[in-house]
Length: 370
Image 1 (tube, helix red, strand yellow):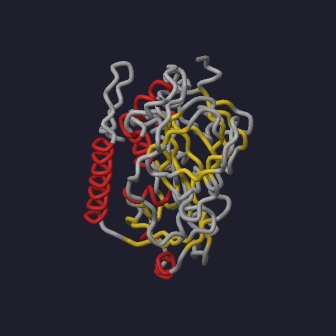
Image 2 (cartoon, rainbow, N blue to C red; image 1 turned 60 degrees about the vertical axis):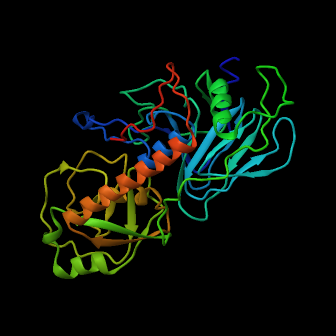
């Protein structure tokens, strides 16, 4: 099978689709933030569902997603927002069929898939058996859109190359989960196997903000919170902030009753990270995300607890954010709880999908995400 055939064609780009993996840690010395999937745990889980290592590259979709044509058989999984994933009539006709998410799905060559705008959540992560076959840049295949490093955002007409073994891997891994193909299937090794169903009946547990589009964020006091006047501190926590349309993978701009920033000191730039909440002179906070700048000079009034980073990934324009001040002990407990929950999900996937380890494709979903 040629490289042209082992690929995915973008028939229509979504709002913001990009290639992502776990990012580029350790590059702050060259002023490059980690980037990568906005929810690395969800990307890891999607890869585990199709038998990939956590570091395999997949797709991140935001809001209304893309329409893709699969040029070969694919074992695929989508984790994240409640996108309606629909298989449309492809090259060989057929009817429109809704496909399940949160579990691996076998999709035959020629199928056309469309991710509709989600009624709940904002982003999803797509993994394909074997991953996307793209060159690494600074140790990652991910798109860092803010810096222009890695692949560009997906555009209509683009072709994404898959691992050349994608068909064999997809058939083998689908057989593990779905059982042997129907006995009367074509014996041709290149033919698409015929299964009675395309996905298992189970699905991984949903991990979305419970009151979406209201998102409660546990936050720690930042270095400069005490510099704010008492009335401004009260206003910071006593209102719901609305995510603005200018938000992107660099940060969330939130709107509300502006805080009084008069008298705040002029600061030298200092390091910032994912979850740092800065306060520009206009008095409306900015929450830094995966592609944040590595230093900043605005006051750092809050730091979002690391366990809440997946919540930030689901904050789209119009969502409301409420800050809840917590201490270090509670933030640490939230992080431990989230790590335990991820490990339980991965353990469940390994039990439900006991993929054999291929020496040429060492896939170990138990690898850490940090």
